[in-house]
Image 1 (spheres, rainbow, N blue to C red):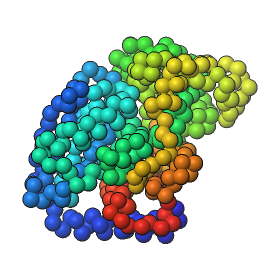
Image 2 (tube, rainbow, N blue to C red; image 1 turned 90 degrees about the vertical axis):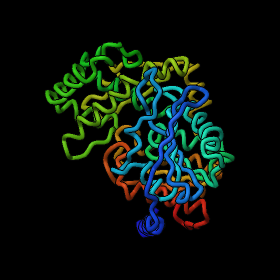
Image 3 (cartoon, helix red, strand yellow; image 1 turned 60 degrees about the vertical axis):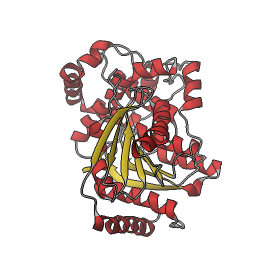
Image 4 (cartoon, one colour; image 1 turned 180 degrees about the vertical axis):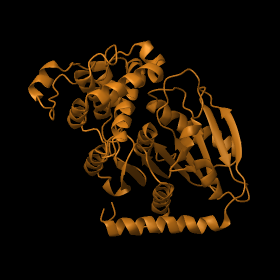
Length: 386
């Protein structure tokens, strides 16, 4: 997207919302409940006299495995703004499901968010919304794109922020690669296997293992530099981002691995043919790095239920920071190839944001992305902006 086009699109979207904000709704009314499969939900509505008849439905990101099902309220603020309050002030209803499972819950996210739209919201409001807009962040970004491909009868347009939409298998391998390369440069800092995490590591993560990791990084900056170069994980010239990236990626290995194995029916990480480059001694790295072969059952489950096709059936906006260390920006061009192959390239508007961090957007960027989605749905032709 050329810069002049991007400025035009953002300005148009922000003007759209500025016009809507002139008659901002004053109240936000919350209803909570439980879906038939046990998922919790929240429904925020403006005064009915102020409601524009449309709904925004939010698909949340990853939540660490736990038997307690609740909507992650900390994820309902993006870019410094409260999503329920902001959308209610603009006249939209807002709803979100906890999903019926924590951890790896993409399949559940698609199903439970659809159930929220089809069976919960119409009953609670006693009317079917005119337009339904699905937005999702991180893991929820993949929920949103899969829904945009599969459920055109449920949603009118979709938005996905910083999601693993290009290759879910690639995302799993990225997490695994980071752990095995970390273990090569910093052996025995984290006990257990990269594909089987001891309970003690999860229990004592903040009190024991994060401090151990930080001490190891400080003691060997040369190894840190090689770790970052080999894995391609994003950092900036600010040294604090190095620790943030390393701890953030290892968190996902520690807290997501066992649940992913259980959910997928086997171990999904595969590096048995991987060639690692970028260290001071690549031959030694490739000879000694720990190797794993994915379970055929797990790989088949990923291919069948977690990979996008690129066949979008509605206007879809994707937004991603170019310096995302957790879900790398390379997910976006991979998805572009899928949309081209599927003949759905012009259904998507991609918005790259030049910033470091996972889902690190400003409030203006969040609102502009949503505005573009609504304008695409309601007829604005963004010629040449794909």
